[in-house]
Length: 230
Image 1 (cartoon, rainbow, N blue to C red):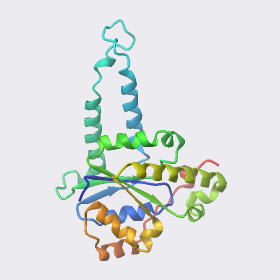
Image 2 (image 1 turned 30 degrees about the vertical axis):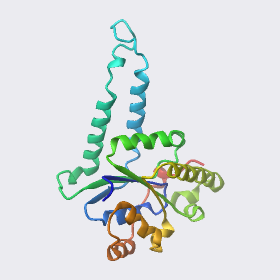
Image 3 (image 1 turned 120 degrees about the vertical axis):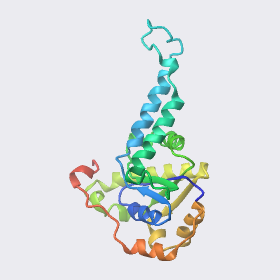
Image 4 (image 1 turned 180 degrees about the horizontal axis):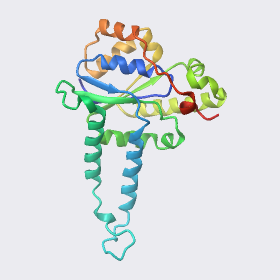
C-alpha cells in the first residue's frame, strides 16, 4: 500500500460502515469503527500544551506558569501516536501481517470540530504515520431519511451536512493524500471505487468487493444516544 494509515472522514448514515468493510477486505489492512472521536481530545490537549509554551519566561518557581517553556511537544506527539496505534490494533497488536491501520469516524459534524477542521486533520497527520484521508459522502436526501436523521429538523440538518461537505471538498482541494467517494459509487461498483484502490496502491479484487457489498454492514443504534439535537 502507498499509505501506512487510513482514516475515513464522514458523517452518520453515509454508508461508511460498508466502506470500512471493503477496506478491511484488503490484505494487511485493519480499519476499525467509530471511537467517539477520542482523537479530538488529544488534539485539544496538544493545543493546550502549545498555548502553555507561550509563557517563555516561566522558568522560575515563582512564576504561575512555572515549567511551561520546558514542555516537550514532540514527546507528546510520539506518545500519542504510539498510544493511538496500540488502542486501534488492540487484539491485533502482535499481528505481523498488518501493514496499514486506521478507523472511520462520523463526528466531524460537531461545531467545535468543524471550527478546527483543517487544523485537526493536520494534527491527525502528526500522530498517524503516512496517513491518507478518505472522505465518504452520500446523497443528502437519502441520509436525512435514514436512522436518527429522520427524527431531526431536516432543514437544519441538511444545512449542517452541506457545510460539512464543503469542508471536505475544501480540504481535498489543498491536499493530495485525500480521496473522495460516495455511497452511490460503492454500491454501483463504479470507476471511482476502482480508482480508490489505485489511490491506495492495492489491487482491485472484484470478488472480495462483491462479497463485502453482499453482507449487511450497519449498527443497531440507540436513538437516545445518537439523536442529533433539533
